[in-house]
Structures are given as C-alpha cells and as structure tokens.
Image 1 (cartoon, rainbow, N blue to C red):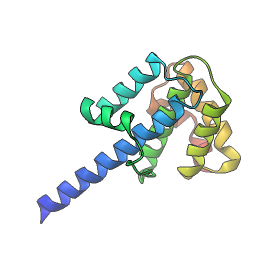
Image 2: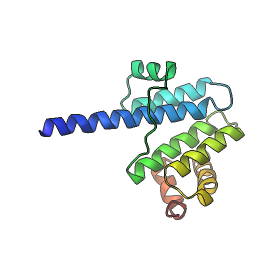
Image 3: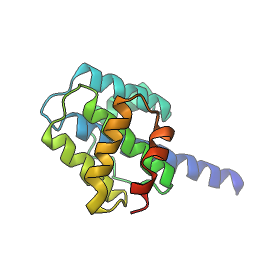
Image 4: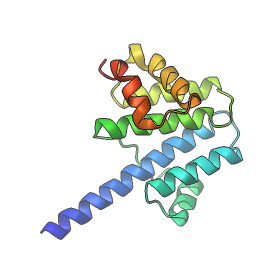
Length: 146
C-alpha cells in the first residue's frame, strides 16, 4: 500500500510540474515571440522539476493535454509565481500581455486581486536585484498574507 501512495504522489508531482511548464510557456509566448533566453529558462526550470527533455518537447509541441493545477503548498505557489515573473523579464522587456498573465496567475494561485500587481512588481524588483526565490518570498511577505 505504501508503494502505491508513493507512486501516486510522484505522479501528482509530475502533473503539477508539467502544469508549471505549460504556464511558463503561456507567459513566454504572450508577446508573440519565443526567444532563446525564454526557452533556456524553461529548460532550466523543467530540469529543476525533474521533467525530462523528451517530456519538455512533448509539452512544447502540444500543451493542450496538460491540465492547469494550482500548487497546494504556499511555498510552491510563490516559487511558481517567481518563475513566471522571471519568465516575463528574462528577455529584459515586459510586455502588457505577459504582465497580465503574471497578475492572473497570482490571483489564480490565491493571492488577492488588489495586491497581485504589486506582488508581481515586487518580485520583478527582487529578481532584478539578484534575490533568489526564498529571499524574495521573505521580502514580499506582507503581500503574501493578503
């Protein structure tokens, strides 16, 4: 029985990671372009989330089969939002559609609509200043509780 639960947990984690990659792709292509630096960031995040290159290629070809999942853990929510914001700024140009998607993901992840834009802007500032996700999370803590 334990093995079944472990396998189910791992499968759930895999699906959540694929959902995150799909979300990153959504932000990356929001401006109508898929730049090399965006693809490289997706590859890095995929690797960090134990997604094989072949799985990544499948998601890139057809992400329709990947269902949107909201992270359950508050830290994972923040880390995924951090990655999405990082995707938005990796090409050093923030497009309106990318900004709107990041704000939308913040709200979907459970952050208040009133503070979503400020939260995203704060994460941008932290990334630009070299803050890693955990440091950024500590710096924007007051916004996370709204």
